[in-house]
Image 1 (cartoon, one colour):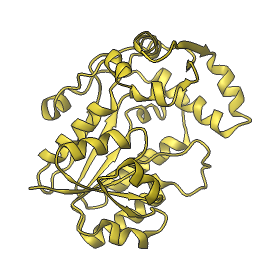
Image 2 (tube, one colour):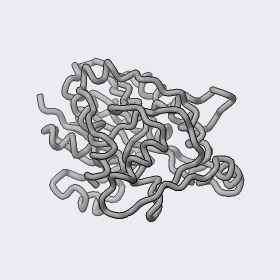
Image 3 (cartoon, helix red, strand yellow):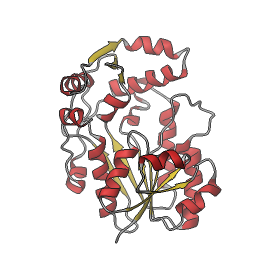
Image 4 (cartoon, one colour):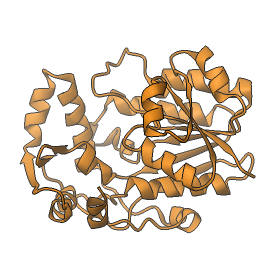
Amino acid sequence: MQRTIAVIGATGMLGRPVTDQFIKAGFTVRIVARDVVKTRRQFPQTEVVPGDLANPASLVDALRDVDVVYLNLSVKQDEKPADFHTETDGLTNLIQVARQVGVKRIGYLSSIIMRYQGTNGFHWWVFDIKQEAVRLIKTSGIPYSIFYPSCFMDSLFYTQKQGSRILMAGRSPVRPWYVAGSDYGRQVAKAFQKAADGQNQEYVIQGPEALTQHEAAERFVAAYPKEKLTVTTAPHWIMRLAGTFARQMDYGAHITEALNKYPEEFEAGATWADLGEPRTTIEQFAKSL
């Protein structure tokens, strides 16, 4: 049965490749966006409707006749703990409307790294938000598909690339399983194709090989064809110090600490068996840009 999927967060670094894969897989896609004009420029052949997670009334028509809602949400680097958060406050609004209009499934991009919360005395309010989002979805009464990804190759280009440099904070021996956003998108689309009515799904998302962050960055730089790039590493303590003065640097200090210390192991065997293996290498990703 063909399903209608509403996507919230379609234009972001990770929302775009997932939305592209929904379209390729033959789903009927409806993008819900605050800036409809801008979003239509990115997806000219796809239905785009207005909707804002901060305004529940705006979601009623946006989600009417939708089977699945896929959420690509995030805490912005300049947000404060007391601010409105799309992953909790906005999600609460969405769940209320989803029940009202009969949405049959919620899909949500989470994170494997948030498991670091509580380890070595680490506590970050952003991870509290992400854990609360999972709780809200699981207790909503609506079947769900939750995805817990490792590091994305896409962040090397879209987040860490500043001019001709790939910026790194500290060095770490841990080896995350880097995955390309396009591979993740294919797996999400497959999960929704396979999902039976009423079935809950949870998948760990990991890429084809484990690499330290510096190994990933150096291989990306070596393969990137459009310009000469270099990897620049700053001591992590500098970011922590800067974080006492700037909210964005505080965000960066916390997320990089978790990335540098979370002892990731391979857990995606069941995901690969169900949804197919991700095959994009760092080199292939770099050359595709």
